[in-house]
Image (cartoon, rainbow, N blue to C red; front, side):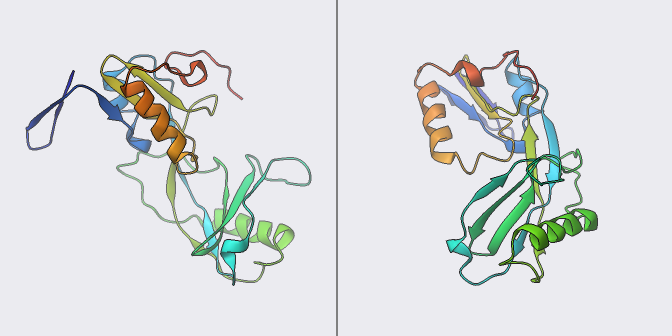
Length: 193
């Protein structure tokens, strides 16, 4: 089993614990499992361009090259707030407890320029910036593994929401003593991409 102590010094005992804390993983996860790869926590800045019928926009990933001059690539999708686009993994390294959440004007300019060139349906509208955290492993693959009573999910590189149901299923399988996937194992030695 495992014991978790709350901020109020209350001890909670369970047969298994799942640690899935996003940008805070380098602290608590590293303290309870071994083999956690280095995790790079960055503040990213996607934007929402207001457009009619945004939900009808396709999701896309625009990889570097093929005319794209931005490192890391760009992703986009329709949402209730408009067309969301963002630079992949381009933000500064931050401490999640001490980030300022202030949008970067230079990143906003890069996304506006991208929209002008590649997204004619949103060009000319004023985007609404926001900030979020990415927690990235050196190989940009997830960490989903179990050691003892602790299952850890970390380093999802900004993709956890997109894979939510699958991540939940993998975590549940591990909690129930199912096999893990070597690709996502703690202690793996995959080369950086």
